[in-house]
Length: 314
Ligand SMILES: [Zn+2]
Ligand SMILES: [Zn+2]
Image 1: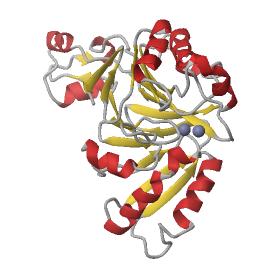
Image 2: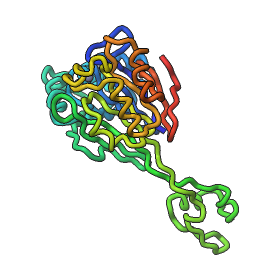
Image 3: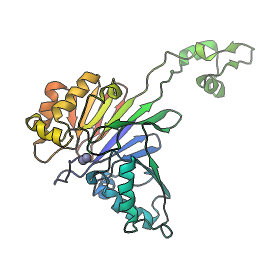
């Protein structure tokens, strides 16, 4: 299961109700902050998730509405020893701007700052891998180079069939653990049991995809195929589709078309413009893809295989 907490859901400039782009994806003890628009630091406090273990930051692209909050966040991090080490992962262009932002006026001081900051330039492919999940980056077309989307994917796993293990006389404890790891075991009575005998059919893991600003959907279709939850921008509506094209953004209708063609389970729209009513954006998308919601600041969703539950609603 993944959890996503929306910290900022507004496009370009904040509104009274919406902060600038930022969200946290959680999996077990891991936390990934995706984008860090102005004001993110305060949104983190208000959301109640805190700064602990917020040590991996993924940036979708280098536009200011997605990175300016890093200045405030690191101003705090570098003075209050909130967190010892942080890694920022972003495309080359975004990293250049982030370096100017953080080092230009010495928000991070090369010698005095307590924090160890690593900046990693992203290439498409696997960014992070743990025992049971991975994070993959893929290219996205927006204004300027090096824009990325991120796929969070649990590894497929075979469930342990307790009834079969019981029937075969495998005692609870380390022997069962060994079978789960795929090892063959020998019981006290000499009986040899292989993992095939107690593991069920392989089940696909949960997939959560986050796409920041983008002007195209055709090159995302293959990446989005069958994901459980797709989080993507919807800055414009169809009535202003020419403007969406000019600024390399999507309309709600385009985002919904992508969700429909890719066969995703749930669509969550974010990067919402102040120019529209939320209800109108939602309706435009739902006409094409009914399983659509509009993210609001501080919404928390749990994403499981074939299931997406809004746990906390703002
Ligand atoms: Zn933006
Ligand atoms: Zn942008």
